Length: 463
Image 1 (cartoon, one colour):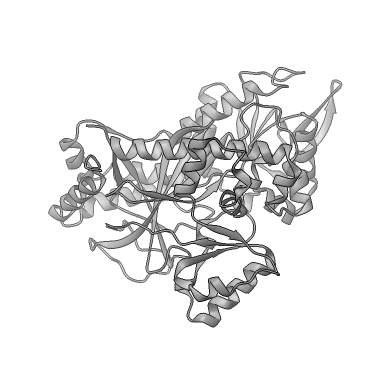
Image 2 (image 1 turned 90 degrees about the vertical axis):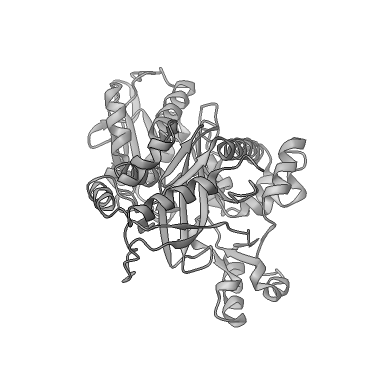
């Protein structure tokens, strides 16, 4: 596609950095900002950041927007069928406890209020392959925004911006707030009892060891500006109490009408506690609006692509959606103890093995990255034992970046040297609408796991 300009724009940015001999002063300002801002590292363990941003033009943005929103519709339809069709749901091979929770009704319209769709995007051709979907707890929002803000403090950015009058960045926090607001308004019990449909008390619920309060500071602060009291809530502190004839979900600071669920369903089951039980009961009985309901779980698992690769979705999706899936979802197969692993063993360079459970990009193991065939055989056996998947390895797009700081454990300061990374773009969906990009990459390794990983800011040049 001749109108794609991403590669040229990023090369232009790199040339500016070369002219500035690495922009040492700008790098220092950006580093200082990130040291005092919300953390760059997330639950996936992203350890470092790039001084060079991902730069998209309107053409690339249009492709990515269409990809995200089309796949968002696919996820919504697959989730709806999971809720209504036990045979279809069985294809996800969920443990009984997970399946039971996935059937808890939400009481609101949009089944998947938040999602992140990961794509391997070729900046020169516009082609892309879907890598996975995170609907149970969409990560990376803060990291991407903060690195973008840091990059904008540099002289390199100022020179680039002087050449391009119309540069935009993504308001990811705004997307979260819009989705929270609209989802709560559509909740069946939004104005029941003492609840307020416009200003509900919001609890951002997670295990504190898996979340950082600073990560949600933007959300809490901006809700406060709207007159909404929000706070990070340790799931272990939740309980149900009765007051004035009404049962309600509370923590040590009081009642919670709206839960922004950041805790993974799998983690709730791995770390049982009275608070997790209270959250489930509150969701079942409609005592609180749990945004990010438990029924998002099936399409958050690595079994999703195996189901989409099968004929089971022929009567779930329309013609356009089915063509999209066939074109962009890599061939994937669910494994069990009876699976013949010989075909995957014979072509290690073709396949990734992903464990059962939630999609996490960094937990995949490629056959090509294994030391030898015996090592790959052990990976496949372990994957089959726990019910994981094998997925065709998508072709990654490689580009050059300048690192803002060395990765944790990396004793080489790369300075202004160019480092080649394999790119993954996370496309955020809020209420089914595209809302931003989480750009990241890996170097010194295959697409999963990477030995070093880097978060990039993201700019959109509209001219």
